Image 1: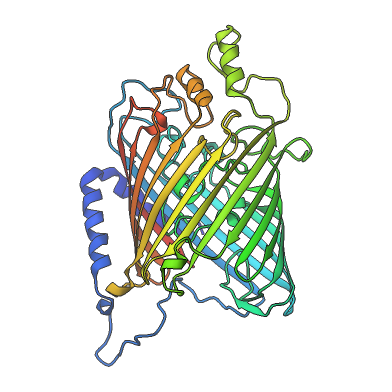
Image 2: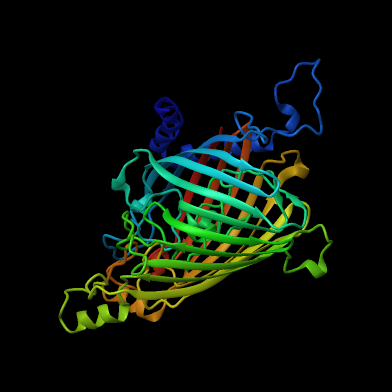
Length: 488
């Protein structure tokens, strides 16, 4: 494992020392690889291509019938940005001098079907993970940060840890069966159409809630925090993104309903979980309708989905307005959201997303989110309102069915109390330039994901960010990324 990690990481580390010329050469190389026709792979004259043969998307084949499951992945992301305009900055600012960083995350997914009958199924799921490297500016200075793989506390190191350990059960209620894709989070390939789905253990809430097949996976799709997740959903999680939770779900033919009860961290962006559920907890509900926004105007085979999400968090969260009052009264040298009487408070919000097939190769998606914004951002990121729209295009008609191009635009905002807190010199767990000339944080992201061989993918990604950290005095900044992803 250590040798594999070193061999994958070394090319990116060497590349990082050669600046923008190397970036240009690598971009050109990968684009050339992407444009190679499918028949360019090595083949003897006696061999004939099989037109309908599926292209392997993993280094090793995996059984769809075994009771046991084992799969792994490694994701390496190199990111860089050049110098940008910045009349001032502070400890929580995106660095204006230009920088580059590399992150590496590896995961081993294990599972076993303990009970497997047509009506009942019980699975045990266990995942080990290692997260190393760092994000640009130590993942500070942006609400929509540019790399979802980055752990917001780099001092935790890359020592492997248990990311998920859970029991997953399904109770069939009739209505026949439905084909299902085997994933690390659900091993069955056929499930009852009407069913109750139960999970309990350590997991990440975005494993189950706020999913979107166009904007969810930072390993094969977009990279930005507020593109792959709803930025205004301050979901219960430690700094690595995991919590202990119980999730109940009802599924029917064209709709589903979910409820998740999860534990909150003891402090903002903390690694420790508060086990007193009466004092600190997150409650989440979601309704999913598997019918697109444009179903009435498109052929029936064009699939679509609409999801609506709501959340209520209970934790020891401070109020931005109280922090400002304490500062103006001379009780603190700067506004400090952490200086308040310890008491349970409530933060709530809602959101939704949609996805819609437009043609056989083109899909569109969107997200929106809102939270009340008076209480501090506590677990995910500093966003009180978000809107995202985008699309992806599959290159199948160009002879590359596993290649994909994506483009999205996301705009993030914070409420007036949050703005004033940052303007007066306050700091959140991500933001704080020492001053603030407020403007919405706008981000355009584009990627090209290239399948090179079996489970090996490369991607080129660009993110253009205006008003980083909601500050019109700073930026804009262009963040360039190269990603290598391996499934095995």
